[in-house]
Amino acid sequence: MKEIPYYLPLQEAIDLSLKHKLSSLAEYVPLDEAHQRILAEDLHSTVNDPPFDNSAMDGFAVRYEDTQQAPSTLQIIATSQAAAGNQDLTLSSGQAVRIMTGAPVPEGADAIIPIEACNVEGNQVTLNQPSKPHFIRKCGENIAEGQVGLEKGCYLTPQSISMCATMGHSTIPVVQRLKIGIISTGDELKSPGEELSYGEIYESNSYGLSGLVKMLGHIPIRYPAVHDSLEALREQFDIAAEECDLFLTSGGVSMGEWDFVRKLMETEGKLVFWRVKIRPGSPPLFGHWKGTPMFGLPGNPVSSHVVFRMLVVPYLRGSLQTSYPHDRIVHARLNTDVRSTKDCLTLRRVTLTSTDEGFIADQPKHQGSGNIDSLSSADGLTLLQPGQSGESGELIQVLLL
Ligand code: AMP
Ligand code: MG
Image 1 (tube, rainbow, N blue to C red):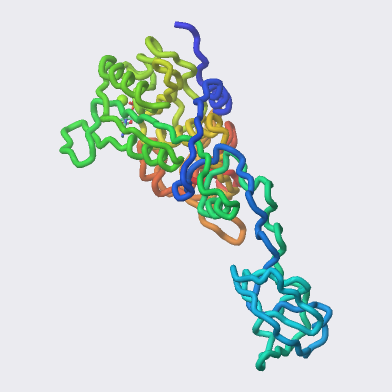
Image 2 (cartoon, rainbow, N blue to C red):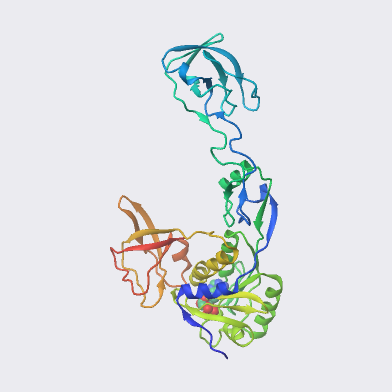
């Protein structure tokens, strides 16, 4: 077998995986379905926002120079309501126009007096305070027609969906969702709800991985768990390679006799690298099966999750040219000793407490990579660099989960 890159620093592994990018296609979806999708092209505004000068308050549109002294009394000549603006309305000296929030500001007006500062009697209004030349939202002050409001690769949050609508778009170009296969491997695995015999455990990785895939806006295809046999794996890999853009396996990638995923990839697949300098989660591999990229994740539940976040997430980000999901990293002071390693990036599970002096990181649960409770109860993963001490009191970086 030809030598394959082995036991790489995390960044080298990511870079190598990205030499085998997935191709991404765009599709148009109605605005209503664009939430949580990734924008496939820059989105320009079709209009000025706002499209006309309008009032930011309910009150009276006035001429600033008429109203610098208080009190001053003006003649009410008309009303300007939202969507019922009178384009020909012009305000002269001594006049005021009753105006609603969002309604067009009449020609000649350059200030709005809020209703709370006025007394109205018949068609006269007395302003009890001097005006300030504001409360007018200027045409195009938010975004100008033709300007890029959202950039290609951005993740469409509720607020960016509103932005799309404001810019006048009813259909949105988004990156097509990827189909990502998930294959658990191991003779000992039973589905939750089934009866366990001696030596068996509940299969949990595929459910967590499926959640991660959904969180990124893609489509998980969770296959039934596969036994530890080359034949069974080969058959399932063929199906996944046919049906999916990418597939993930869990288990069977370490050095043991029963680690058939690794054996199969070494002998019949195209292995790109094996093992990465992160702890937990050092055994993963990446390669191709019949032209479809695949990640072989470790079987330990914490490791499979951590490797997804550290390796699969950057691969998807790089392939789809998006910065989503951003790595949210905070600084925290360790409240207990955390075991680091000499040559690996160490990702311990910590809880965070916000204090006046910043975040405090604790490690209340035992850190076995089989202990999923240590992950499900954690707020973040320590980013301890190789050789960093991890002693109580140290200021460290924590990647939020
Ligand atoms: P392996 O990488 O196959 O040697 O598995 C390492 C450990 O993770 C073993 O204790 C397995 O029983 C456990 N494991 C493997 N796959 C899963 C899974 N899908 N769900 C839960 N635990 C698993
Ligand atoms: Mg196994």
